[in-house]
Structure formats: structure tokens, C-alpha cells
View 1: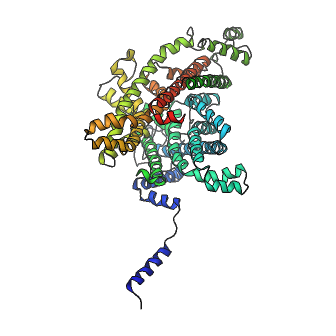
View 2: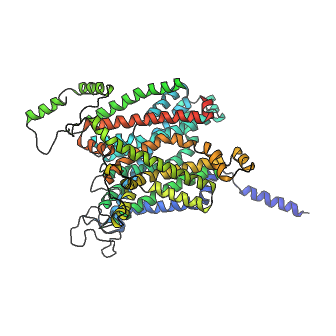
View 3: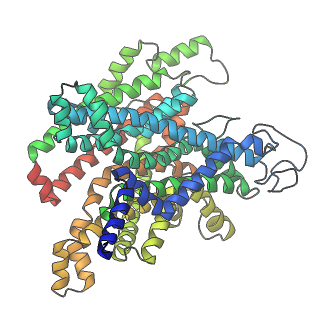
Length: 303
Length: 308
């Protein structure tokens, strides 16, 4: 005879069998998915990236096609002739230019951040794992570098190497790695004495292998959060340089360049400032919200 | 503590040395020189000018001479602004940048602390979300977007404030530059203060203060602020760096005679000594402020003192 409570236990056990073990990452993803602001930002960002990638397919205009036909210069936004964002002083379609600017700005953000990420993780993990004198010297160097007014050096670099596109990525990346290194080192210190590291040491793994296989994968959480906050900082830095006329060169463009151009025509053609500025602001918003969301998801104690 | 300060100051010397060296050789590696103009100079004149500025000597000799000058506090003559030494130019421009930067920082601190603690006291309520969204706007919209828009409305359309110019630092001329320069800092500071105040307001001693029946204002101002505003001390140096960089753009937009603008035009014109002078000045400033922040921190926070 089956008692009702037994049946209940049986169903409970069946249900339990269906529930899979959840890792830290599953938990984090679940919390992130529940965060409407972060998910909304993620979708918005995805939309902007897709728009930027397929820009030439959407619009019949080329980003650098100059047109001096009357009425095509500084034309306000219109669907006739498909200029949804209007045109600039050289009759170029602003919609396409804004999306091309998105490509460059996002590329600068991603590549410079990867540069910073690579340097910062390696540097921080090595300093934190080896410790002792090595750590001391390495972190003193970081302290020293913190005292450098880096934007000024990037400006000099741009002057020296004539606004080289690749160099812009590298220069900004080289500026942003310091904080990354500090974060990784702090995390590494906190896991260095954990059992799994000891186990790896006991198994006879080399230092580099331990750092690569065991340290870095376990410090990645806070790093990801910082990455999502570095990308907008880098995009801002690029736009700052472009604004000063030291960044991306014509006919290529970025949001910073477009905004700098738009500022001069603010009274006659406000759309030249407004659309690139909105795109840039929304993108930065999204990255910041995703970063905040990830931080809450990975470190739920502050909720 | 004295030994610590001394040690930090001693580290500052090689730091500045490295900065000067790197900046010197980078600047010289740039193509073109300060005397390349539209019109080619007669060779004799060019040789004379180069001799006058030591540009005909090997680079390493120029570097040695420059370094020797810097140690004695002589930053050399400006290559572009004839008849001015770099010290004179910085003497003219720095007070402007300093006043702009300091006013912005103070303004940002006042507003940021108010907004941040207001948000912390109303955590997860509409007031909190409003403040934090506004702060996010401050972070994401760069000064070179807000500045022209504000100028257009307040300056051009409504004629309330001057559009640009310094006018010997008249208050009316300062309002727009200070505000636009402070905006991103307000955003960062209020986020920082909100975070640390939320933590502090949950702590036991704040609960004790409330349990004693202290009015909320005193709980916040006398008890919570002490620990809640500590992170601002270590934010001092990064804030200064951000404000000096931001000031380059603001000085451009509002046409202010500060040294940020000198720096950019100096870099573009290959005015070697002027660029070097500004870099050295700002590096020294950031080094000193970093030190001040660290020392102040260890005075204010007993936990750090114990750790030393």
C-alpha cells in the first residue's frame, strides 16, 4: 500500500533528480537574466552592433560619398533619398556615417580593452602568484605608472606617429591595463593559498601552468565586470582624442569625429551632433548597465 | 610615517626622471621640427636658429642640457612663442587651469556628496534611481557634447552667460566651464559616495547612533560621513588626473588661456620645451596628490595604519 506521504516523497525525489547542480556561473547567469536593465542593455547593444555591421546593406549611400548637389549639403533628416539622419557639410549621408563611426568606436573599445586585458591579467597574476620581492617590484612599477598623466602621453604618441589607427588601439590599451593588473593581483592573492592551488603544486605543475590553468580562470569574474566598464572608458578616450583632431582621420570616422564636426554646425544642422551623440551615449549607457548587472550577478551580497 | 613620506618622495625622483626621458625622446621622434614653416628658411638663417636653440647638437647632448636645466628649475625657452620662457608661459596659463580645475573639483565634491548620500539614504527607492540615472548621464555624455549644447541655449539663445572667454576669471565666465568640467566628476563621486554610504549606514555603530535617538541629520553628518566619505580621499588623485585631461577640452571649447590648450597646440607645433614643461608639471602634481591622499588616508583610517 502506498501512503500519500510516500508518494509525495517519491515525487519530490523525482523533481530533485531533474534539478541539475548549479555552478557559480549558472547562478550568475540566472541573476543576470532577471535583471531587466542589464538584459535590455544587452539587447540594445546587440542591435547597435548588428546595425553597424550591416550598415552598407541598409542604406544605398556610401559612407565617404561626397555630394555637392544643391539641397544635399546639411540636409535635415528626410526619408526622401533615404537620409534618416540628414547629411553633413559635404553632403555625406549621416546615417551611414554614424554607423561606420559605431564600427570604429566599438572596435577601438574592444581591441584596446583586449590589449589592456591581456597585459593586466598576465601582469597581475604573475605578481600575485609569485609574490614576495617580485610582487613588490612589479606593483611599485604600477604605482609609478599611475603617476603619469597618460592622456598627455597618448597625445604626444599620436603626434609622433601621425594618428596611426592601430597605434591608437595600442596606446589606449597600454593606458588602461594598470587597474586591471591591480584587480587581478588582489584576486590572485586571495586564492593563492587555496587547496586547489596546493593540489596543483603537489601534482608538480610548473608556475606558468598553474597561473594559466588555475589562477587566471578563477579570477576572471571581477575582471569581466571591469572589462565592461573599461570598454566605455576607452570609447570616451578615443572620442576625446578625435575631438582634439588627434584620433581617426577622414574619410574614416568615429563618434568623436562626428560629434566634433557636429558641434561646429550646432545651430544650422543640429542633427549632425544629436544623432552621433545619442548613439554614443546609448552605447555607453548599455555597457555601464551590463557592467553593473554583472557585478550584482557575480557578487550578490550587495543586493 | 616620516620615513614613509621620505621614501615616497625618493621614489618620485626616478619616476619624474623616467617621465622626462620618455617624453623628451618621444617628442623628438616626431617628424618635423618647430621651425618648419610654409616657407623654407634660407639655410644660414635656419642654421643660426638651430644653433641658438642647440638643435644642431646631438640629441643626447640636448637631452643632458635640458635635464641639467630642469634640475635647476629652468624649463628653457619656448620654441614657438618667441621671447617667452616655458616658465613664463606656464606661469600665465597655470593659474587659469588651476582655478578652473579646483572650482570644478570643489563643486563636484559638494554636489556629488549631497546626491550620493541622498541616494544612499533612499536606497532602492525612486529618489535613488533618479539620482543614479542622472549620474549615469553625467558619465556617458562627454563634456564636448554638453558644453556646446549648454552654450547654445544659455549663451546664444537666452543670452544669460558669456559664450566663451576668460575675462580675468569673472564668475559669469566661469559658470559654464566649471559646470561642464565638473559634470562627469559629480557622476563618479555620487556613485562612489552612494556605494560606501550604503555600506556604512548598515554598520553597527550607525545602528547604535540611531538607537540612541539621534536625529537622522546628526546620524548622517556626524557618524556616517566620517567613514562613508573615506573613499573620496583615494579618489583625489584620479580625479585630478581626470580634471586636468578634461580641462584640455574645456579650455579649447570655451577658449580659455589655460595650459591644457598650450599643451595640445604645443604638441602639434613641435614646441618641445612647452610640451615637456606641461607634462612635468602635471606629473609632479599627480605624484604629490597621490602621496597626500595616501598619507591622509592612513591618518584618517586606523585600519590602514595598523596594516603598515
